[in-house]
Image 1 (cartoon, rainbow, N blue to C red):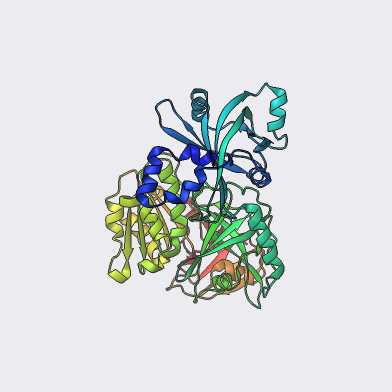
Image 2: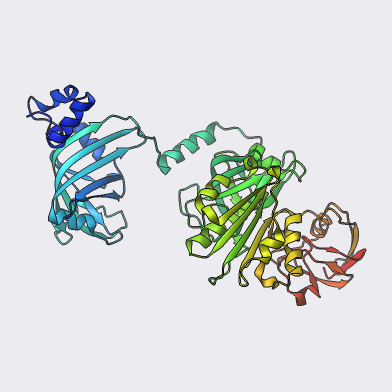
Length: 514
């Protein structure tokens, strides 16, 4: 008879195709001689017991095949003898398609993959179900250390197996393998600073770096032990420690731009700004795979609305890092949205290709290089009366959104802004700020914020977002007229308070209750 797998798989129709395609003679040798490939050898047994997943195909009463993935701990597939394997069937989505198919037709086919080494083992067999109350059999199949509800056991009597060539198998690697590589990398890597930064309570390790655009890089952050991360929602940012060369460790807030449904990793994207304060340059120069960052827990000061009102999302440049997960979360919950995304040119727009595929007609791209510009008045003015408008990007864009909304008499509660820069505006003027309780008078030049000047003067003032979105730094105004640039204070609060992280003064001085 020969190769048992070929005996089952090479039907007359298959042999006819082999003949037509010129491979018929190549397989003649598999169909003669003594029977083989129906009794597991040492290599097959070892391969099966090292797997943590496999695919199983069964046949429905309608004749349609059905493929299901089964997974568990390494070794959850048990080799019972040289012709029998089995596994504990864990509770899944409770459709029971494979279970029903096996009860009707017990023929199954298995694919066991070793992606790392590009190997695969194919198995034909007859499956039988074992009631979970059959204690003796289930003890052979269950793993007491794996916390999953077992509904039944499955025993497969092997009819035949075959090894496949590695052609077209894309290598993939497990978390444990990656951790091993990262450990090796950490031992060999040399940084100009310590391989661990910051003193926050949330320890994260950089496990991936991607170039999103010519001056934007994405950094993948995971728990060093492979644990799940705290859940986040769209609009969340995280405070990251950054070591500026020959300077102090500073902290910068970055939007978590990965899909909010993911709990295995966070992704941030950093624009390198040559005219900035040096943090983004240090990130691009020094952040690499294996660096451990002790961060603050993520916080959200840019939350989505809870009802089913439609949404308009406006992103300029790297502002897409905050807007992207918002668009994804809104789409997932069925909200009617339209995303407007502007940048200098297509090559400098992070996530553009992905977003165009994901949102199709619900996204409009604007390239200033192609003389395409947002018409904010038209975008806002033609939106639904109950639409919530989200915007993140350069100061000029956000100021345009706020001014246009005021001009069109749009309820300010419908406008939600996220600022990713807290630098003073181009027309900022120096001011004198008196701190009443600290008995200090400080000079705030036109290139720094009031908060920066306070901190530089040694004033222990609380703060968090530094973008006027959280109220953490808010202080009472005793004298002078503030010029508000926050997005969080109410009209009534602005009569008494100021957010010194972004706001200035219309007068030449301010007196603050600090």
